[in-house]
Amino acid sequence: MTYMLANNKVVVANDSFKIETLDYWLSPKFRKYGCKWRITEKKHKLDVIVNTVIPNQLCYVPYPFETKGKKRIYLSGLYEGSTTIKGTFEGKSVRGVGYTELTHTR
Amino acid sequence: MSVNSWGDMLNVSEHDVLSLIVSDQNNGDWGEYPYDVGKLHFPRDEGIHDYKHEWWYLNLHLMNLESGGKYDVMLTYFPKQDVMPFPMRYFMITDRGDHTYSPSKKFTFGSLRVSDEKQDIRFRKGLRFDSWLQLNTGFAFEYGVNVNNGRDGLSVLMRSRRPPLPVNGDGYVPAGVGGYSYYYSLTRLNVAGYLKLEGKHIPVVGIGWVDHQFGNYHKQNKLKHMNGFVYNLTIMLILSVGTPIQMENLLISIRL
Image (cartoon, rainbow over all chains, first blue to last red; front, top):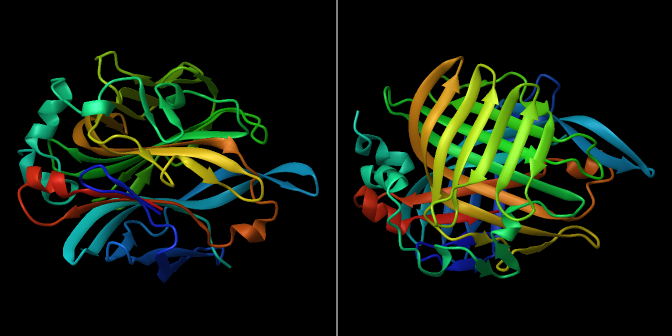
C-alpha cells in the first residue's frame, strides 16, 4: 500500500494495512465477488468502507496464463467497477471515489 | 449548473476547470520534463518498454455539465506481449445514476503503436482510431485522450495536479518468484472534454487516475491462485471539510 499525502509526500505502508471483505455478490455462475470492503491502516489511522457502485459489473477479458508449459487464454470474468469510499483518516471524516479490479472467489 | 455545485464528492472546482485551459501551474521540480523519481524516468517511462508485461490504465470520474449526471470511465491498453498474441483495449463507461455500463463488449483487439520515448499511444480498429498523447504545452504530465468505439467514445484533455506516485516508494515492485515490475500512478488529474454515449456527445469535467506497469513477471500458473484476488484498488480520499479548493489541499491518494 502506497500513500501520496496532500504535500505530495509518499508513504509506503505495506506491513500495516488490512483488507476485510464484508459482503459478496453471487454471480449467475455461482461465483462470489467481493462488493464491500473495510480497509484499515495503522500508520495514518485509516479506516474506510469501500462499496461497489454496481456489484455485477463484470468484464469478461482474455486472461493469459501458463499451465504445464503451455500458454493458454482463459476468458476470465473480472470485476471492474467504480467504488465509493467513506470513513476516517487520522481521526477526520473522509469520503472519496475509486476503482476496483478483482477476480471471484469460490 | 455551476461546476462548484457538483464538488461534494469529486472535488472539482471552477478553478480546476480553468486551470485545464491556462497553463499557469508552477509545480516545482515535477512540472517539466525531464523528471526522475525513484527508479522511474519521465517522459521515457511513459512510453513502451521491452518487458513481458506492460499496460496503461486510466480511470475517470466525470460529471455531465448539462445534467449533473455522473459517469466513470475505464480505459486500458495492452500491447502484444509474450502471452498475449494481439494488442487489446478495454473501454467501459459507467453511469452512476442509472447503474448501467456500456459498451456490452468491453475489450477490443486491434493494432497498437506506442512511442518508446514518451506518452504516445495510438490504437486502431478498422477505421476507428484512438490516441493518448502528451500535449505540447511545455508542461509535464498533460495529455489528450481520444477513444472511438462507434456509438461510445471519449475526447478529453487531462492535466496532472500531483507528481507521479512511485508505487512501493521507488516504483520498483517485486512480483512473484523472481519477478519484478516498475509501477507508477498519476493519482489526481483534472479532466475536461466530451463523452460519447449511445451516439450523443456529453460535455464533462472531472478527475482521473493513471496507472502504468511494466516488467517481467509470471502470470498465475493455476487458476486456483486467482481465487478472490484483488488486483487493483485505487482510492482518492477527500476530507469532507472546507471549501473545494481547501479540500484539494487535503486530498490523499492511495494505491493498494
